[in-house]
Length: 300
Image (cartoon, rainbow, N blue to C red; front, top):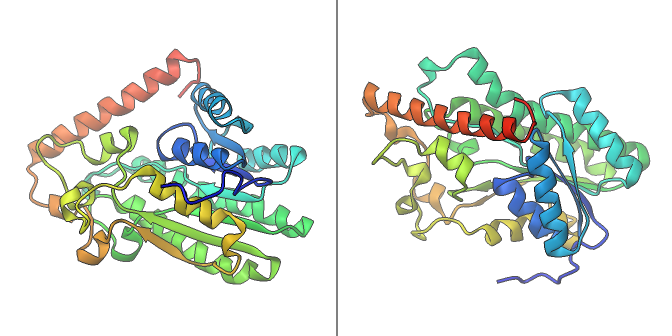
């Protein structure tokens, strides 16, 4: 059910990081449908351009694609400066993420940084770049970060993601207090299981095995989240309807984290053979993504 006016975000200019596919694409589409001017960014320019074209054709609102490695602070700042020259952002959605399940003892330093540099560093780079400009120009702003309920519980087998998301949870609370005097709000969402193809391949890769984190059975409402439910919450947080709401991380998980932690801890009994099968499936998913990038000339 859509409870918002079709122009609820008219006049808003919003950047969605990781906006080419998955949750980011759905969020960008929903914001544009409510008349926001949307910018999306990520590393796959071809995918971003296709998504921006789809958004514009579907909603009639302008959407713009930007190729950017969120791990590179200078690249992020240059992208946001380019956006600012057209029109200052009013909102930022920190959505870009990377994750896969793995026993932590088997995780390489490179694998750790692949996740934390995108989730933690990238979100901070974008938030700081926007925040400095909002403060300089005397403009209000709203930041919404997509997190997980593990920020309250932690989770086995996704330690880098749990660490990085918890850091952004802390950033949300800290900057809400520091930047409140500038009329800059920071909030976050903590979705439960909202299946998307790319993420699900890496978080649910073991045949005939599911964890509580990716199972509808552990959700009191006994179902997965529906994308409009998440995009409705994002719309509310980015709108002018809640200017006094800041520093909050809001769970949207059907009550899962209240009934019991929706984590990957219940994979502790997997055999080495099952973990190897998981690694093989994750590697196949990564290879598929690299092949798609190479086919469209987007590089690694």
